[in-house]
View 1 (spheres, protein in one colour):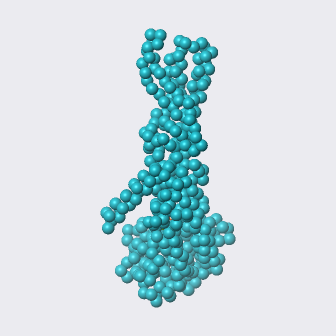
View 2 (tube, helix red, strand yellow):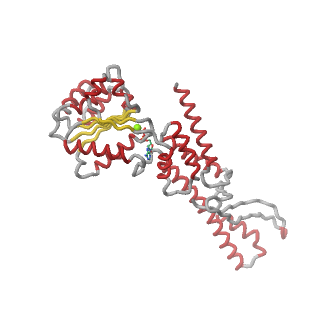
View 3 (cartoon, protein in one colour):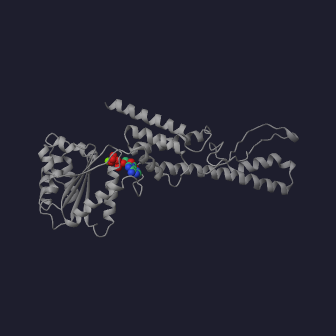
Length: 372
Ligand SMILES: Nc1ncnc2c1ncn2[C@@H]1O[C@H](COP(=O)(O)OP(=O)(O)O)[C@@H](O)[C@H]1O
Ligand SMILES: [Mg+2]
């Protein structure tokens, strides 16, 4: 983090030499290794204004040479203050962007094993033209969707296996569960069909399909595709087990036992799902996830602030989304304190993190109460 100069401006009426003058003080920078003692970013100073005001206040006492040297000195101090403020603010912007859940890191820490297993399973299906359904479970925010997307991207970039079709259905984005069929058929056949026509078309496509390219379908938020007769879930699980389906279905759900709960046990076991469970992140993993996103701004947070956030989140849910949101909020709190000139520090401290945790936990408690 950039250390910055404290710069303060005060207006006094000073009747020296009979002239009414403005008095401006530029404080000497006080630096420490990790923090600053005072920071004024609330009003960006206009260098020209400061220099002219100071020089005019001294003007009558200074020689031309002295005026020039004073101008240079003051200019560099004012410039330094402005540059530092801008850098500091852009460091915070960088932190906020890096911590945003929508920022997809190149690598997902703590999900290396799941990534590896999933990659091998899909790769083997593609190369052998086999079919299977991979059932991924885990509570929200454990990196299920992000890991699948990383794996698919990696496969699409691998010359030996990239020749497959990939489609994605998300239960959250459908108006009703059965529209999953028409959505999928429209993506595959580039034509609109009714729900029953879609089911026929898809069944035909995924039977004796070995001559064609392998198909991978991601069905995310599967929990929302539950219906009375379970037609949607059943079909997505059943198609890969058809003869020469040449189809991989990756189904993501929040609960481990959804297949057993919604289908008859014997049906669920016949489908031979391959399962991968994403366990909630513990606090050490949450620390690694947050820190990996702050690589470019390693001093933005005090270590004990991240530890506090990670411990709080892991005790409740182990949800990386929550941990990232809290850390982002902590940056916002500090930014706003600095802008109001109320912060004695430029790093996110334990106290600021406490504030962010309190705020975000009370929001989710409120949401929980309103939804229940
Ligand atoms: N291992 C990880 N490393 C970095 N970021 C992660 C990791 N796991 C989750 N995230 C972040 O949390 C967000 C939520 O993850 P996501 O995969 O959507 O969770 P899920 O699908 O399990 O609900 C992701 O967008 C990503 O930003
Ligand atoms: Mg998800």
